[in-house]
Image (cartoon, rainbow, N blue to C red; front, side):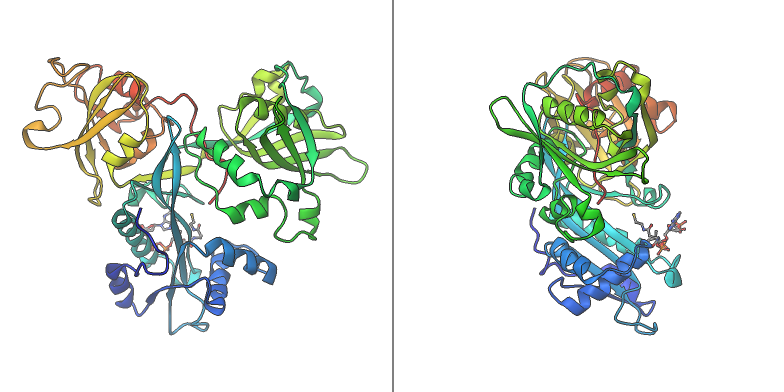
Length: 451
Ligand SMILES: CC(C)(COP(=O)(O)OP(=O)(O)OC[C@H]1O[C@@H](n2cnc3c(N)ncnc32)[C@H](O)[C@@H]1OP(=O)(O)O)[C@@H](O)C(=O)NCCC(=O)NCCS
């Protein structure tokens, strides 16, 4: 993807739309401390976070150094140096079924000040992001959403689900297979060097995971503000396989009232193998003086209940959507993943914003690779015979919107389910069953961070 954060100009159309309302749409250089810190204040305010301290700003400057950072300014406001709207974005990899990584455009920091809401400012910014992403060559734009009602109008749709896993530790009698390696309790800082490479391997195993930015690991390991109460309470476990090679790590902390058993909280498990994942869960379930284990942002397909004698010791709470995808280039997005078998399927995609609309033919072979091409005119869906083989008389095709395509892309929802909701229509009997098979994924898609 061609991209340079410092030389990518702001979208002209959005600039004009905002200019017409007396507002200025500007690029913010993260190395310009005063401008970036003011932007950061607005970002924190938008999400109702506390005002950032200097230690937070130092970290943020690193996080955003490689990102496009944009603000909208109101010269007539009481604090004209602080933007009344913020957005940031960067190109990054998205793991797709088959273990490959797709060029995607991550969008974050979307805020509009309460004094300026519901005047179409977010709309201008979000549409500009889609144009920026498409012109940089991203197959997909993606985000995580505070509310499920904001982004559908721009073509985004939920593609993964998440849950908070809670374990009643007193009932958690382990029956899972022993991992052949060893778990070590380690100083979190000792993981900093090996973490990026290990996390990269872990991320590639699950569709829906995105590449982690290096500074995120500093936050996870408590290195941003090491003397804070929170950082000092972070503990880490590392799993080394039978050859002594590190295959996973996790951080956790135990929160408790005086004299009472605690709650073990974790929001970061990086496991490059199933053994590592099992070994880490086992440690969490076998720490004494802890009543509950609570791990956020886990897959709804977590194997944990199958590792305990009493599967009901595990609860999946707060199940909900997490990663939202917006397909921009169906050919690149579809041909990037591997499919669940052979077959030919036409997809007639409707996109009101004009990025991804059209008819596409997906021709998958038994090894899961697919050739995808745009088809037009006489080639359009339903007008020529298509099916399991090119000579078949039975056309297999679906009509669907860009949002449905985004939700199906990683295998997070079946075409059949969307058809039951009236959101996907099959051209001929058998098309939905074929789509279900092709789009299935070996692993439930999941994203285990916010961005
Ligand atoms: C979400 C937010 C950025 C919207 O900004 P905004 O400038 O008020 O949005 P717009 O005026 O451009 O609204 C465009 C459309 O989205 C709708 N919309 C905006 N925010 C919405 C929300 N929170 N819930 C439902 N609909 C919303 C508007 O009603 C409008 O609808 P229309 O298509 O029928 O006209 C703003 O409310 C905000 O900063 N919220 C707090 C921070 C946050 O949650 N950010 C999202 C991060 S993922």
